[in-house]
Image 1 (cartoon, helix red, strand yellow):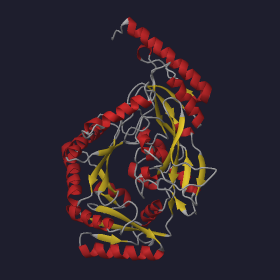
Image 2: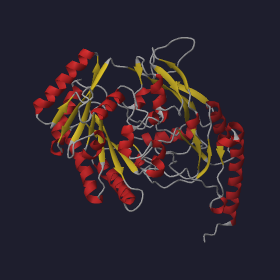
Image 3: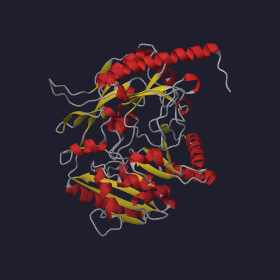
Image 4: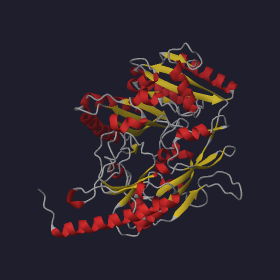
Length: 503
């Protein structure tokens, strides 16, 4: 049995008392039913778990959960922790759907969790100007439903329709039209002192101003993306123009054509023949979309007026057939009820058009579980590197994924999200059974993916809770990390906000 020195035990008792006092005051702010004060853990230290997570990462011990419902409540709670009565730090999440990277879990033990799902208001919306002010608990299904039949649409992701718009954008998630961070034009933030500020572009009731996220002087919106400098309580997000017509061209190619076929797709992207994010699925990832066994699958979106869509889809199909690299080429699956993949093709086209599908049919096909049961029953991990958009680089990334499979026995799905003519977001997914050795193999595979891809210069742009140290390991020697820490110390000298995955 471990013996704790008396002085340390006394310090622990004092810390526990201070924490309970602050949580008691927080209960007065948000309501006693919206604060969870956990029971006693080792040596009297409060300990609680947020429940299982789909990645089966180690569950962190947390010192309490506070569930505010307004930005003012968040401000008051942060102010309580800033007063210095406790050294516990605040970890905020939106709806907790950060699956495969840690879900709701903090990066470290010992945080008090701010569950922001109760901040679920769409505060304002202007369809004509193309913006909406949303809180962290607003899901993409809810905002998309509000826009149905209008001239604007939301840039949706292929994750569950019931995930947070804001939470995903703040972690640089990728939508079907562009990277989600590009949708952010303004943020409302509670600073570690408890001060509430707004940065970037915000609607003005007295006058209409053009939407411009950067403002005058240093641009501050990006300061709070993947950041532990404050708690974001609302954002102004762009609503994109809804195209008059849209079509997704569906292509297949064999694994030996990865380099040549992806180089051809890059040519189309660089020459402006595509719209939105082109998606390329390896054999494992293509299954959920009706891909043929042993084949890669490509979705190429074109949109605009009806004439433009007819012209571009016609050009793409001609180009795809002419190059001889693709085993199947079709732009009619969504329009032909007799097509083998008709239902899937319809759902894909609707997603590109801003409909996240509230039934989550494709999401459940990929994960094997409904969103509400994923953390309790599912098992998968994400690895998210950026790869240069060249045929050679993507072929090398494919080789690395195959090397990991050979070393660990873990078959990885890989989806290439084309973010432009020069870079691809490579989403590597490891799906596993929760019991037995498969979970261990998946985590071993994740470790190898970090090592192998980093050695090639293919750097992840999002981290999971077990690889936070890679933020330092991967940083170029330019002084940026040191400056970020000096900035953190200046803005949050008492470390009110927990470190997070990128600290």
